[in-house]
Length: 159
Image (cartoon, rainbow, N blue to C red; front, side, top):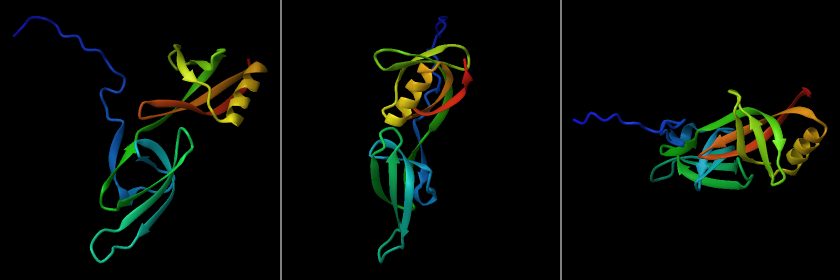
């Protein structure tokens, strides 16, 4: 055995998977699901009866949580589907840079500078207008499968 000490880089997620398995028959409307490698929110679920040979099937209609595209998938209800770990975190908005990135204040007082402004026009204009008026804004950031995007906005009063 060597006397060297081993130092490991600590990761926030401790190597956790980006998804977890869940039986298709148990996934409900407004739940989350991975379709074609994209994290999606389920908007419609229909289940077909078992046929002559086999399984009942679940037909999922879902919307990508980051780009808003509609995706569909049909899975046997007894099979497992990947479900993404979806987190929402609130950060205080500090600054908006010229190149479309935002500077956010985290809970522990550090800054987070790696997020772009959202692509949704109404949310984008609300953030820019509110920031221009000098309001104290808190943005909700949704993260799933290694992607992050601003998805909401709260006004906590003037600065």
